[in-house]
Image 1 (cartoon, rainbow, N blue to C red):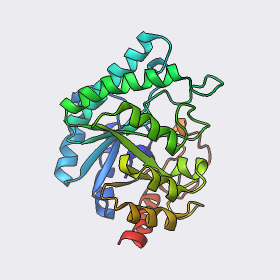
Image 2: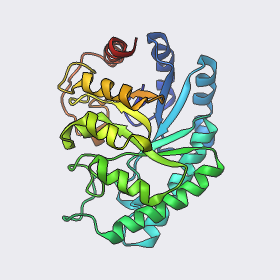
Image 3: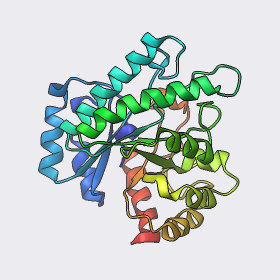
Image 4: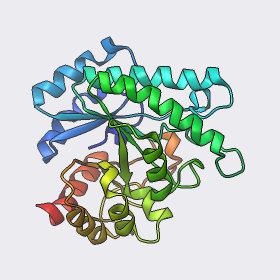
Length: 271
């Protein structure tokens, strides 16, 4: 379960929710990393280890850390932050840092990406990947829909970027929310890029409870079978607690019910 369901601020008050997530049946949690002080994460690490949960991390970048900025100082600022996020990932005992950090979230040029911008992304990701490899962390790059990112907004675009980066620690993290917007057929897109998918997020078109929206879940799970996917499945659900998601209405009852019903929905396919 992705902890962004409770918002982006991973303060100590959220730690008790980990036991509920474990009680529901989840065997891992995905934690957003925006704070890079290792000491901050000590109580999280202790509770995760006490509960025996697997842990994964995610992050994204703002304009001041844009890894494709024309300003080399801004690009370096992004890489420096991401390296620290990798360090936090390793500290927590996680093996994946995922997200759309190939470029900044919600920053647009008003045109398609240039080859120079793609080259800057490749250069930034290679610098990050070298550090991640030393820390035994895999990078899962994610494409976003066209309203959130213009650099890579489809499976094929991200696949081309990852192939260009060509580093063993750089793979694809596939998110069904964006695919449901951008692909002609989500399952076919998954299969087409299957050799580079290493991590997977399940997200409803409403961003709320799995199974209560329009995502064609049979298509998704049948394609996972065809891919012989053996990695993790992470539920990513957003609420008004996450301002960056621009969700200003409540599409669910409580966070606890959303977490429970989403788990039950998955069990219909893999239980």
